[in-house]
Image 1 (cartoon, helix red, strand yellow):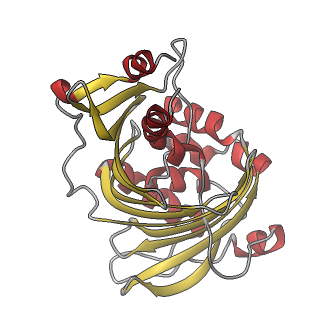
Image 2 (image 1 turned 180 degrees about the vertical axis):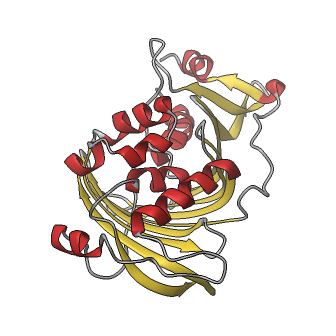
Length: 278
């Protein structure tokens, strides 16, 4: 495969890159097992419109509300195990996992649209007059299991986690939020819990598969006054090492739904490979 085609193939894979990497954490002390147990009964702060909640109750309420929103604006910065930085900006959707994101690396920007298992990557040079390359992540009839780094997914990982603690009320991005923390092992992530049953069974099973490749994760979560996650920092350790991500979310339910590029502007990944002689 020549260099130009490899570049296009890399762009096609960009939609999948954000899928396996990182939940992130930048701040504060790590929540250990002892801190989690002590914090289990700590209330997550009453507001004028809501009574005090335990961390588990607060995350469950936020999850249910976030699921209904469906979409949000997203800004993510990930430092991978290789030390390289990937920035993402655009819209995230969930159930099914979707995104319309501009990806920024040191090699430049590209745009990625994902609808379930289909990824469209905008190419820097047209092929047969077409500027989008389509790639299917599903294989042999099985979905392409990966993480989507959306707010519902972050909350789903924390449902029923006994190590989740309330770190206090804080101002984040100029707004009042409640800060929660958790440091989780792979065993914690995969452990079934009654709280997790608020998820659709197919979504819970999918997340379970995606989390199998993660050995540990530290999460700092800030829930805004509207009940939605405003920011998530995470540090994730997996098969390829440790990555760090900072994610901010806003405009829940008020951004347009994500749509595929016009069919006339799309060429299949396999067609690009054929033209390269690969």
